[in-house]
Length: 91
Image 1 (cartoon, rainbow, N blue to C red):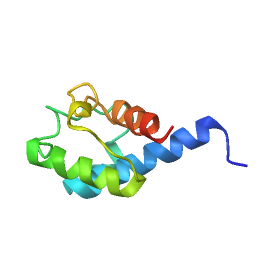
Image 2: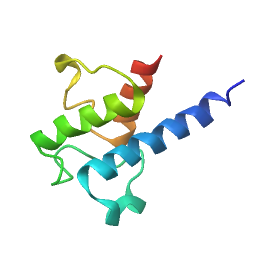
Image 3: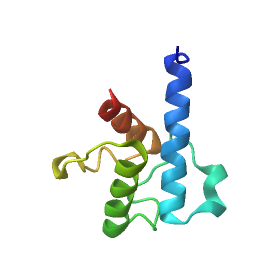
Image 4: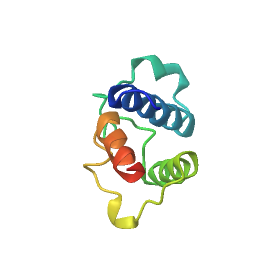
């Protein structure tokens, strides 16, 4: 049996963060990134090409499919919103 939903949420957050850090190459700032960290418009590395790379990396890591319509500013607002999106795709 898997752990509680809180543990699963923490695991997914960590995995999404790992993909984000790796894709953007911001390992030097990884310790400062948490669920409330603003992404789009706040991380200069997260431009339109990086969003595409990040989506592809998330699809590969989690085995999910992200439709073009799913890629919105709201989804990429914070690490938390991105994690919720991935969790919904996994459900």
